[in-house]
Image (cartoon, rainbow, N blue to C red; front, top):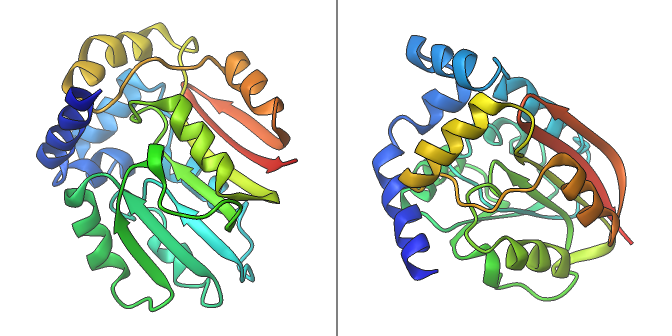
Length: 221
């Protein structure tokens, strides 16, 4: 497990300068990569749909884990002036970019930490947001357990991440390249397995699969 954490730190340190370009399809090569290996799924559109689950008038406590570089969230957070926003990431390299983007927002706190051992009290957040995180987390059972623990009853668990079984090309890319490089960490759920996992403790208000990406909003019972 420690080696997996070291691999994650190393991989995201190496990719910190191209991470945003890959997700946002900002470069010609990133557009080609997404078209060839990810069924041309648009992360910008998925991010917009995910963030639309959070009302602009939201004024509760929100946990964003992992915050990454805040490439998708910084504009949303700028309109959530009455919210208490806490952002956590394991990678200091990702956090350095996030800090720069979010530095003018006084209601946003950033912290380095592990999703498997969240430094927050039980039921302390109204929303837990996890964008493009669960496919990287090395201990997914702990990640699901901890995000559930810190979420209030009736609170929303909002997420998007890779799932296997939807595209042979994407699954091969993940298995033979992305996982070996440390950007993704097995095991991975299929859509059906994820649904069953969530249904045990959440009520799904929305659940969508686009290509090999899933995004959903689930309410804690």
